[in-house]
Amino acid sequence: MSDKKFSYDELTGLPILSDVYAHVKTQLINRDEVGFLYFDIVNFRRLEEKYSFQKCQNLLKLVGFTLKQQKGKLYRDEDLVVVGGKGLDYFVLFLFSPPRRKDSFANHDLKLISTRIKQKMKNVIDENADILGIDEEIDFHTGYTVIKDDPDMEVERLIYEARKEAGFKAQLEEIMVQFIANISHELRTPLTSIKGYTETLLEGAMKDTSLCERWLQIIYDESQRLERLINDLLDLSMLEAEQVELQFKSTNITALIESVLTVLQHLAQKEDVELVIKTGDDIPNVVVDEDRMKQVLLNLIHNAVKYSPKGEKVVVEIKKLTREVQVSVSDKGVGIPQNHLNRIFERFYRVEKDRAGKTGGRGLGLAIARHIVEVHGGTIGAKSNPGEGSTFYFTIPTDLVFPRDEDTI
Ligand SMILES: Nc1ncnc2c1ncn2[C@@H]1O[C@H](COP(=O)(O)OP(=O)(O)OP(=O)(O)O)[C@@H](O)[C@H]1O
Ligand SMILES: [Mg+2]
Image (cartoon, rainbow, N blue to C red; front, side):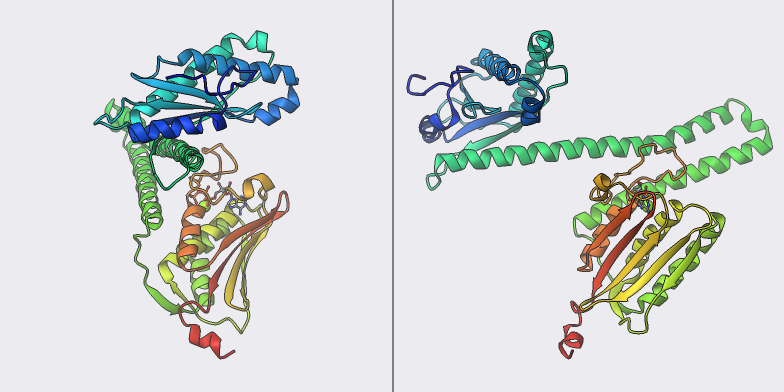
């Protein structure tokens, strides 16, 4: 492969992405597909603001140099390392398989190569930390995918799409890893406790009848916690896969909320929190799956009670809006800082990281609630003033299932 036709970035000595388009196109035509990897320095702009221009240039130079060193060592055939553009903070690697090779690129090969390079770059940066003078961890967004030739599409477009897809895939992978880590953590906590108590019982503690009874109760409670967790996880994945069949029914929402308050009354009394309902005479019936709607309400009101100080009120208010009914749950509790507000509906997301704390939830309730509200065609949200309390609200459209009623207005 002759690189002579490219112009080179002065800083890194690498060809510039826009200058290799024609070459990549030729390779795509000859080989049908090209492996694509990218490496993006996380927060490069922020680094530029914090450290001197020269230091950041040196960082780019080091990364470019390291990548160039990998050239020819990565893949059986040829490869091409390029830099995003003059002064840009991302690098792209094209891998060219032998022309018309039968077996195409395997994703796991690309993944392995990308992980290896990322590791190599981090090591080199660590080794040169003193010279670089940037005293913080440098991380990379990396991604990989295969670009297939498409005669109807410009090569720029193909590369642009590849970058988007690689980024998306990398993000998904990160979510997956995080998800599995979270599940393992949540499963391990009750299991450790069950195992610990059982072992001690078997080692002889069993002979003490009252101790035995108490510990068996703990084991039973913990296994129930496990069961609930697994049910919630299953529920969530069914909701996400849109595999849940809903039993829609015209429902008096005030009566439904009252029945939920009755269930939570005992807990509220224990926490010395008063449950108050505010409703109007003009609330129309809504078409909902009652069990699912109860699940949403239970979680919102339970949360409000959990985070309320003793002696306070939790107010559930039902309002008729133009095309929907809005239910809100307000408390005078700790509140939720602004930067957490839009994340609390993500599964496993909790503001306070200490899972063993008093409130000890798993962060699944709101994720489930959001899905349920959305399959009813509504929206869910939260407002909060930290230190003063929070309001969670959701809507149920009144004109989705029975549009005729609204038409007459
Ligand atoms: N009323 C509230 N006041 C303050 N923080 C809240 C309130 N409701 C929810 N949060 C925050 O949002 C997080 C997510 O709530 P979510 O209901 O999803 O999980 P959880 O209650 O912790 O656990 P569970 O899965 O048992 O419901 C909570 O951990 C808490 O940090
Ligand atoms: Mg909850």
